[in-house]
Image (cartoon, rainbow, N blue to C red; front, side, top):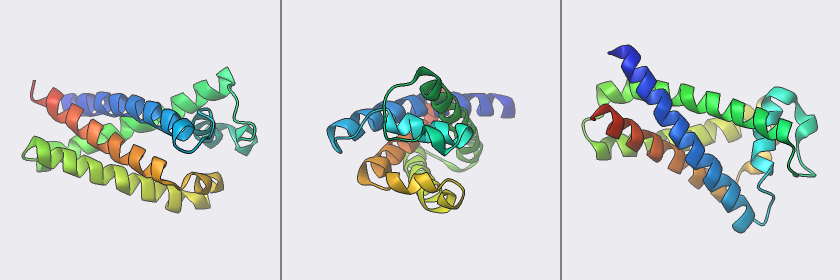
Length: 151
């Protein structure tokens, strides 16, 4: 059972990670007037170093692929960890989605305030779009996990 919970959680994290990337890239462009390639470059910089950061925030297939690999590995791990907690503590879909949304907001705080000691470029992404995208990530992750674990 535990392996199944981890698998379902990892998949939920991947689904939520995909939604997060789409929301973030579209909103950065439409709401903030920035480049959609900024977020993938920030993610890639975790593995590749600050040299890949904007400007210019242009498309580079290698940088985007590394950014997506970093992002989706972290999304799967977070989803699996959430599933372990939710499988024991969440008693309804609404409870799970609320908990997931809170996890998303906590992740925002940890990532953009805590991890700036290691990754100082995260500070440039402290904005409403990133907050909302993290809340959506958590809600989608929880909704998908709850749905798949009850199927």
